[in-house]
Image (cartoon, rainbow, N blue to C red; front, side):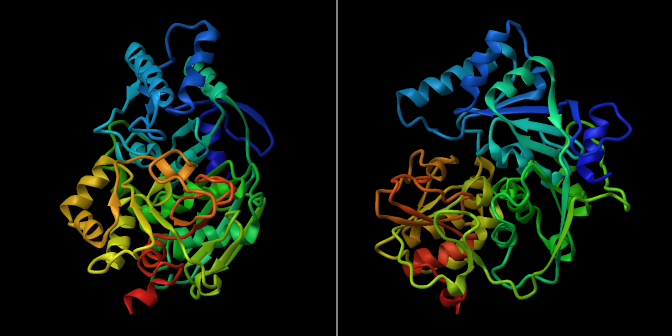
Length: 418
C-alpha cells in the first residue's frame, strides 16, 4: 500500500484498502475556522447531539477575519468562541493564535499517522508530518464533531520524485508551482500526492509545509511526505501524545509516477489567474506592482521571513509599493522580532501585521482595488481572490516577492542581491 492507504487502513480497522473503496475513517483531529465553523456549529445543533465526540480532538482557530474587521466577522468569532467554551473544545484566541495551518503543527496538535479533516481546503498542509489531512465542507465537519469519524473514498496516489540539488533562491514554493504548472489544477484530482526524491529530502520542514499546502491547487485530496529525521526532530519536542509512523510499501501501486530534474529550476511565478499559469521569473517580463504580500499558511513561517528580510534589509521598499508582512503565528512573530527581522522590515518601509489570513482571500488588511497588481507568497490568484475583480495576483516565493517589493516590479532576487 501507499502511505495514504496505510494510514487509512489503520484508521478503518482494515488490513488493506484500495483506491475507490468507500470506508468509514476514525479521526484524530477535526478543525474549523471563523468562516467555516459557524456553519458547522449550526448543523451540529441540528443533528441533536449535546456534546462533541472528544473535545480534545476538536480545534477552532479564528484566523481569516481577525482582528475582526466588522460586526459580522465579530459575530462569527463570538459564535465559535462560545461553542468552544461550552464544549471544552480547543480554541485559540487573539494573542495566542496564528494562521491555522501554521499554528496546529507548531502546537504539536497534528502528528505522524494522524487522520485530520478541516473545514478549510489547505488542511492538506499537515501531510508534511506524514499524516493524512484533507479539507471538507462544514456539514461534514458537523457530522465529524458528533461522531468522530467520516465517510471517505480511498484516493489513488501519485508519486512525485524530485531529482537534483536546488539552486539559490529556489525552494518548496518553486517545486510545487513548477509541478502545478506541469500537471494543471486538476492534474491530481481526488488523488494523494506523495512527495519524494533527493531535492525533497534536502528541503527544510518549512519548505515541505509549503509544498504540501498547495497540493490542493493541483486538485489533490492530500499531499504527503514520508517521515524522516527532520520530521522527527520537528515532532519530538512538540508531541504530547503517542503517534505511529507509517511507511509506503516498496511494492506499493501508484496511479502515476512523475519525475523531475530540478537542478536547473529557476524561481517560479504563477501569473493571473491560475496557479497553473507558471513561468520562470526570467520569462515573466516587465510587470510593475502596487503591493507585495509576504505571509499566509503557505509562506508565513520563520524561514520565509528570514528569506525576505535577507533581501530587504538595508534597502527601501519601492515608493509605489505597499509591502505587507504577515507572520504565520504569534511564535513566528516573536521569533522574527527576537532575530531583528521585524526591525529590518519596518526600516525598509514595509508594515508588519498580526497573524491573519487577511488579504490572501480578499478578507482585509491588504485588499486590492481594481486595476492593481500584487505579488504574493499566498496560494491562489483567481479572479478577485485578493479584492477587485479587475486586480491581478502573481504567486511567488518570499525571495522573489521581497526583491519585487524593492524594485517595484517582478524580478529575480539576483537583481537585488547582486
